[in-house]
Length: 148
Image (cartoon, rainbow, N blue to C red):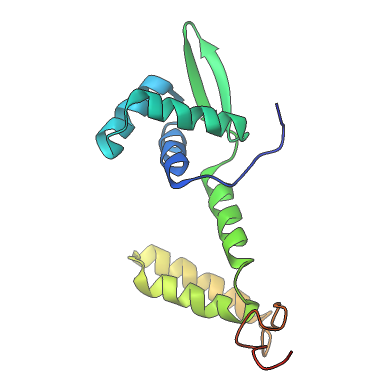
């Protein structure tokens, strides 16, 4: 069994992780009950996804009597940050700001969320650069389209 965590999870595995993050420690029966309601999955389907997440190093397993309890080895915030970092590694550095702005314009935000974002942006101003350098190889983005 590998001790390294595989952060590449499918949309279905993500659904299982959300249940586990919400409950902290949870049995497969409880996960199944929640995902039957949301996804309409059969118990075996959910158990397959749980097994895959254990194999990927995303879940801790412990026994309590005759049942298994699952908990996350990786916190939700850490996982989301890793996933976003992975996503942004596939985008030209010059496009990251526009991409974040696009996400923000589509998101429903509370006044508290907006205040937090304004705080972060104010702090970012102190270290802002005049122009973000492109990180792509020629021909991989619009910055380098005509530079072979």
